[in-house]
Amino acid sequence: MIDLDVFQRICHRIESYREDMIRLQTDLTAIPAISPESGGDGEYQKSRLLLSRLTDFGLTSILEISAPDARVSSGIRPNLFATVSGNDMEQAVWILTHMDVVPPGERSFWEKDPYQAYVKGDRIYGSGTEDNQQDLVASIFAARVFMDEGIIPDKTIGLAMVADEETNSQYGLQFVLNHPDNPFRKNDLFVVPDAGNEDGSIIEVAEKSILWVCFKTMGKQCHASRPAYGRNAFLAASHLIALLYNSLHESFDAQDDIYDCPSSTFEPTKKKANVSNVNTIPGEDIFYMDCRILPQYPL
Image (cartoon, rainbow, N blue to C red):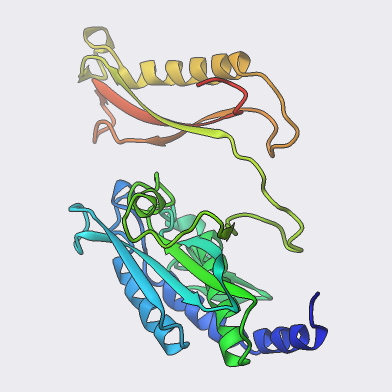
């Protein structure tokens, strides 16, 4: 049974955090925690900021599990865990968020610098402010409110802030689950606030299978004024994309309304640069597809 007086105290205190939340969002946005697969240097600097703020807020029970990764300058991909002890020490309620963000894409499409967060109306804009900083910041202040109000939660509150969610979690959650210091227990509860709507009424219960595929077409480079002397790898890739897009949607045509969207999807996304000049026919072309497939198909 919820104690309404305590609930009102918590709500009032959370409202008072508005400026502190905006400040933390702004400071986190200024650190582009992008994976090396996407051309970034990982989450290390962002994790140092979070460690400092967690300590400032009074969250001192902190565990760090770092996955080695020689591709980033720090040499590690950090995963942070902080807890607020509850009356029931046998079960924790974990809020699982991630520190890494995706690249901002074409910067000219942004109204302002994507790494300088700003408030417009009742919303904050910037790279990573939604995915996944809004949830990460909210989880920190949700834990802080218990300490500031002197309230001991019924169950231990756990904050898990992991690396590498945007690529494949190899250096994040997968690494943690296989680590001897894994803080999770079988009877713990987990909330993963990674999607939703404004009134919080959506609860995700299922996800599609994911497959990222890289395709390379090989041809023969030549001058564009003499196309008969070469084989245009870019042209071949274009035909292949159209063929794959149509045929895969036809082959995987099932619908399931529990998903949004209800069908399997096969989208060409990233494309690598081929030749540097306009008048050369490329002898090699590389593109990627992002496939989200309904789990009823045995992949």
